Length: 319
Image 1 (cartoon, rainbow, N blue to C red):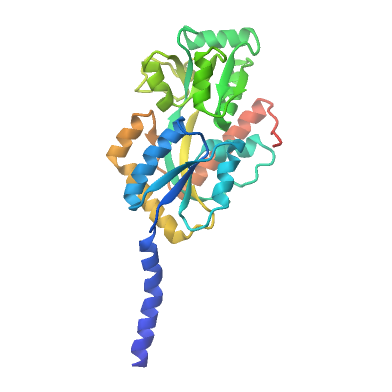
Image 2: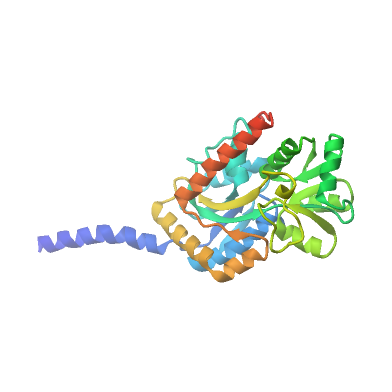
């Protein structure tokens, strides 16, 4: 009898953790987005949250936390309960550029997060007010002829350093104008208060179709299938290529059992043809990569953008 009791206790001790892992999640999750509503990343986040929620069996609620050079969103994640219910859709701006662009970034992108996996990738579209420039070559010629004669609106770290990189490669000086969100950028482009801007394809393509903006170039390695007549920047500026990638992270102390559930749901989401099709309509592509691959991508990009800063003589900013 005693032996039977001991076996029962042993069985229960192994069964309980398994049951707890299977139960996660039992309530809605929140997905923190470091950017304003209506922008390219927000569009992706909402598509992704809906699809991920179906595979988790719980709703995933998008929570926009812009500002503070993405620190507001990052701190919201770090101060959340480490239970796996709070996630963040992050980008290379937060993970690979901010740590080299700012001298005192208060987090380690490789150690201070649980890296669930990569999600998607998209390039930028360089746009202007309709009729402002005949082509991208004209923009480059003007920028090279007179420093800061061309103004470029940007939001976020990736775009900021991308403008610097473009200036270095073209031996020009493009005037950078910071904005908080794409809606303000589009308004000022239309009003002629800024010359050009880098925006995501999900935001750019409808405005280009409606002839409110002109698409001058894309920052991907090759032309976008959705914009086949728009040249890639590297057709005229050798070596220039910028893609924004997104990835899913959670609290660095999130339970491994919860992370495994999230990774499984993420894989199912990214392999779903319906999700892939919806994502492609925004100019995005699925980017598969587990935790270690995600971390390697961050490390590679840290090296890339560190070199861009060194080559451009750009000093880290003290926040």
